[in-house]
Image (cartoon, rainbow, N blue to C red; front, side, top):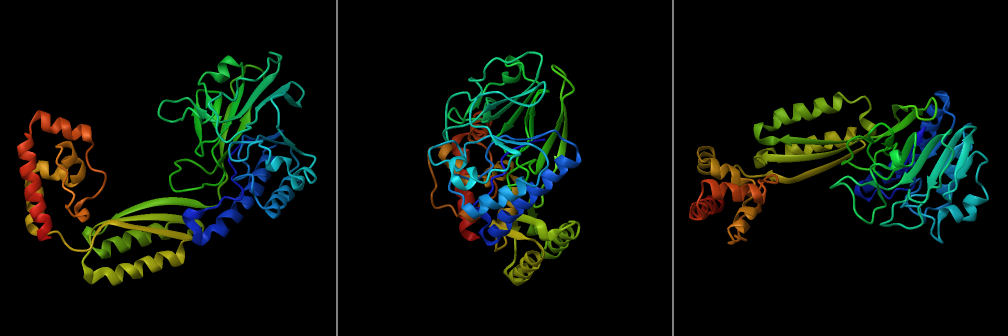
Length: 393
């Protein structure tokens, strides 16, 4: 079983009200995941880095984790990651851990090959710093071509736009160049595959709202040297993190029905964290009802974060709405007045932020609009009209 990024002891400041629950659940998830590995008759477990949130984890948390690991009947191979690197203050050097390390747990502290089973070799790439511009897999020695070879590293595949130069860059062809049957990676929290042999398992328990496919471990079967690995996704998460959006312009009643339906369709709403983004227009007459709805949601969910930054509490006047409906250009710049003004080189700092909803068109898009059909003076006039309407609202 391939897993990574347990982040035991995670601070969870972004959901501070339920931080204790989020931290405790991570330990439960590890126990559940190891039970699944044993039930599936895995030969061993590989943890590709960041088992701990940092090297300052409390000793009590360390002991709790060790008590879970020692109950697992399988060998467990743990790679230090960038959150818990092998620095002088490393948790892996702390007597609390070294003196209580279960016999089935092995910390991969060097680049030396490990043989967990006859004919199977693990090539580890432990980290010694929190950041590095060096390829962590470059130090692997040559090994027998007749063995099943499994690389274990923690870093970022060098996919354009998805990595930083100092974030332990890993070449895309590492598995091929090293002759690996499987490359087990950690660091990215969502499940990701590159080719047939390179995989991120992601974190077994989500850490935030922006992870697209976390909450997994990977069950990997390799029949022999050179054989294509069979990789099965195993769901492991105990908590679910969701992002919802709701436009209140259609009426508080419809929004109330939709949101309550979302909650009622959840199997275990008490294990769900939600970030709710509200936008549109809400009459002040319904503000109390919205408050009651939010209270209803919070009573049933584990956690609710409400983003009302795009919500207008006063209705937009008929004049503004009619002009936006009839003029396509005004529709486009309603999304981002600030960028439009900056493109023209004439910022309008006094425009009310309440009228800006969403990210709006990009600077490149706006330049193309201007160059292909709108003159700067037309845009300036449109902005003046819009500013006047904004003052009216």
